[in-house]
Amino acid sequence: ILNVEQSPQSLHVQEGDSTNFTCSFPSSNFYALHWYRWETAKSPEALFVMTLNGDEKKKGRISATLNTKEGYSYLYIKGSQPEDSATYLCAFLNDYKLSFGAGTTVTVRA
Amino acid sequence: DTGVSQNPRHKITKRGQNVTFRCDPISEHNRLYWYRQTLGQGPEFLTYFQNEAQLEKSRLLSDRFSAERPKGSFSTLEIQRTEQGDSAMYLCASSSNDRGRVHGELFFGEGSRLTVL
Image 1 (spheres, rainbow over the protein chains, first blue to last red):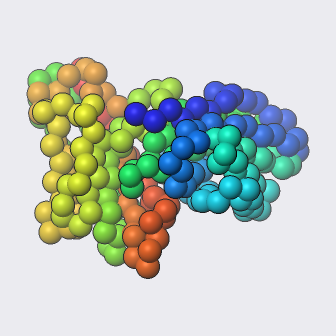
Image 2 (cartoon, chains in turn green, cyan):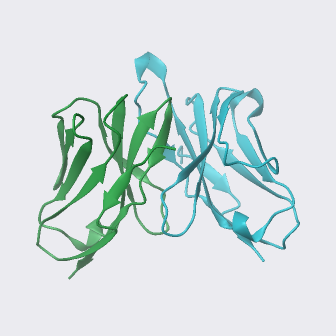
């Protein structure tokens, strides 16, 4: 079982503020790191698939960076909106299966 | 809707009963995964199919759990003699490895929530 850690477990953000949180993963035998957003009563939805050290990906106000040598990835939300409220999961790819962290639950207050 | 479909969405059963969940993946996807998620935890890998072949099964999965994917299309996950510890959200996901997309994203269904009384 691969150790994928996410912190913090939860956070509350004021609408309009920016925030970020962390995913740490094993730095050896790296293939890919995935980020998913899971809104309540919906299915998890892929945000990013990151494969190269130094990768930076962006989708609207959400972006992510990757450091495979030290084994961490950051996810950033700029100018948080209520619709950003969700649990954000990172997952480490190993042998064609993903090992997920426990997630960071973001609540954006209007 | 051409997404991943799971049913039933909710299942309440008494301890000792058998339950079966069904997953219909995106039609052109050859890979299918089952995950289990409990409160406060991330999804936990259960098993994985490439077409109709079950390539890996988690050591955490007891003999009471079995999964099939006949003809490489839909899949079923059966839990026999359910226990209260089986209460969880069971997630199905599919992906494609066509054109070398080894690292491709998973497309998830909305899950089947099991409550064992």
